[in-house]
Length: 265
Image (cartoon, rainbow, N blue to C red; front, side):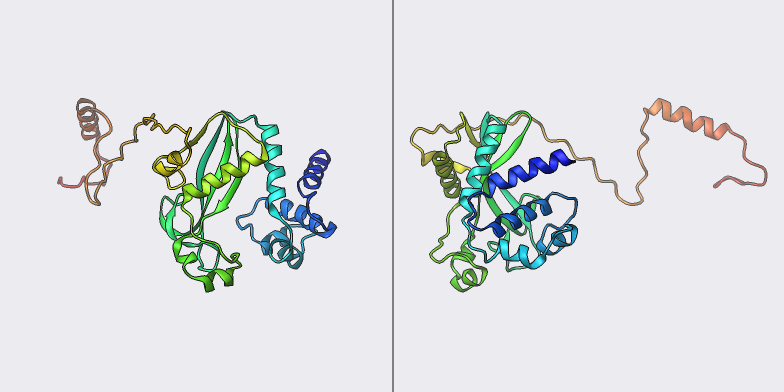
């Protein structure tokens, strides 16, 4: 346990080294530790309650109005991940976060991959480094539907920077790739789902040397079991001959004393 604490302290000091104030680095480490323990909710209040040194007001100040640039932090995380996991491929994908309210930035009724249906959620486009044994996100960006960018008052109330415009998911993916190129991580292959908004034909058309290929499905869908209506007799699991033998054996057994079989005198 002491070794893990030392490694975590080293990670926090390295990743949050770009933060200008010591208090910001301290609460950045506290916030990171709050994400690690078990718990369904990862919002500020339950995280502060689970930590022995948790302070809800200080953590809220760190993640909301405290002025610090997140890009150097994300860049250092991407560099460390690339050092730990030599990437075979980068995977462009979108990640969804189901929500109940309407005030979270970008929340709207849209397809939610976490639920497999259209629901109220946030969606972020991400680039993952992937191998046969591990997968980790390198960079990501929140997707803003048009209903948000067409409502400046709503954006201002949620803290969206002025001048933010709507961008398709594939355009966000291209921006992430350009950012990663500036950070110097490399990958031999970049893949995306052609049927997904983060992939699509626009992603291939926007890069002159890119090659777009549609991979054939490798697995057949599992057939659904037939629906059995209420009141229908369950079909016997054995073959007809075995079922007839079992039925004959049950009929040949003598009835208990004092009992009457249903349908017989």
